[in-house]
Amino acid sequence: MNSIDQEYAAIEANARLFNKTQTNPFNLPEGFHKVIAASGRDMGLGHYCVRCKLHTKAGAENGVKHCGRIDTVPTGFFSRAAFYFKLKTYTLPRVWN
Ligand SMILES: [Zn+2]
Image 1 (spheres, rainbow, N blue to C red):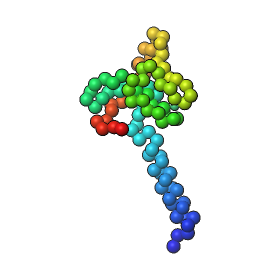
Image 2: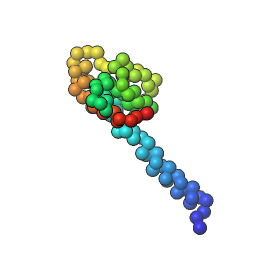
Image 3: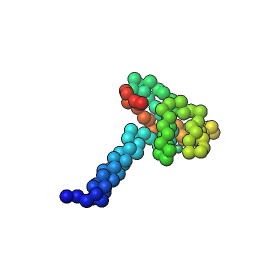
């Protein structure tokens, strides 16, 4: 028979395993990313922060306020070109909440 401490340890281990799967379960790219709808429509920019888990699905072009700051798209010509060059694409699943 298991002691209450052993039972507790087992439950805690299971909870830890589960919590690991709760960090970015949709594999969103970090920071700004290009968003394509399931229909193939261009949805503009999305944003995901790994720290505060805020996910802006679309319309992040005007900046995203999170973690006590505002992330914006660079305005300079070259920094803007580099920004768009590095962007990853995320295709929205057909059903999302
Ligand atoms: Zn954040």
